[in-house]
Length: 372
Ligand SMILES: Cc1cc2nc3c(=O)[nH]c(=O)nc-3n(C[C@H](O)[C@H](O)[C@H](O)COP(=O)(O)OP(=O)(O)OC[C@H]3O[C@@H](n4cnc5c(N)ncnc54)[C@H](O)[C@@H]3O)c2cc1C
Image (cartoon, rainbow, N blue to C red; front, side, top):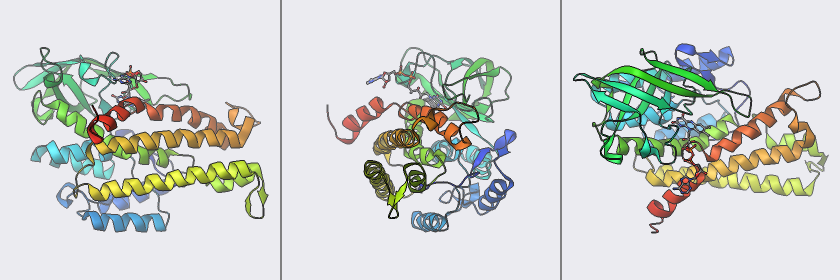
């Protein structure tokens, strides 16, 4: 996993049916990388991946970082659904879904949270009734990131109301299936990346079961581990596309080639050390994990550290830019300054998404440190 400060206009905003590319180069880069399978370097080549070993993928990643190449594809399919399909999917499911994820043609969203099931995810109530060769799904999800634009969803549903964790199944289906509807939720940052997602008598063929009926809890936790491993990288990829050192000199002044203000200099050094330490931790964990596997519960450490670091990065931006970072709109601010304010607000969600900091600390205490 490589974390780097991306260049402006970097990644795809949207792939899939609603593809929007920030610039034509992004699309060309994605297509060329996908052709080699290098959007998913370690996935088997028969499913569109690069077929590289972990060591080869690391070399590719190092070389990409060396030439400051942009991340070709940022997607939940790549980070979460794909690895789970590789582990739990049938041969048919892998052949049907993995190549579209590698190419960035199909975008996935996550139907986990519900109005009364967030941290207590197993409390979910969306129900799927068995109708022989298909299920009929009814219920509501919330906070579905990009639900209004995604092509497919992986959703946790209740297939047995008598038991809690052992009554959950993971289903995948097309977001255009009749009965699926979404309603965007406007956030404090002014953007609407989330939706409420409603299922009204949605007919889902049984070919959409991932793993076993009533075996969805293990599958969903595995997916969360992949999410937590990758979400730190996402935060960095989405981070402000400006070198913090250059920005600091611009706002705080420069003296003998260094940032003039010693306090800011100290804060920036501390941030950079944490960033480097996190990168090394991620690298170490990746190397320790079995080849092609997942880091398991240790992924909660990456998620926790990455979330807190990114929030602190934005606090630093704010301090650096002073009142210039408090603009919402208007001529007195550069586009970059306006974005800082919105992204600072967005960063607050880092310690909530993919499991809150408190929940991840619980996981670290119980499953990594073995505390009772
Ligand atoms: C940016 C963002 C993107 C998201 N994208 C998606 C998505 O695509 N799909 C999806 O399904 N969901 C998504 N979510 C929802 C996210 O998974 C939930 O918000 C999260 O799991 C917390 O659930 P909740 O909001 O219901 O809070 P609650 O579970 O109600 O928690 C409220 C507070 O209580 C604390 N708390 C709860 N239980 C415990 C406990 N046992 N021990 C200690 N503290 C506890 C929590 O840490 C939190 O501070 C997203 C959220 C954000 C912010």
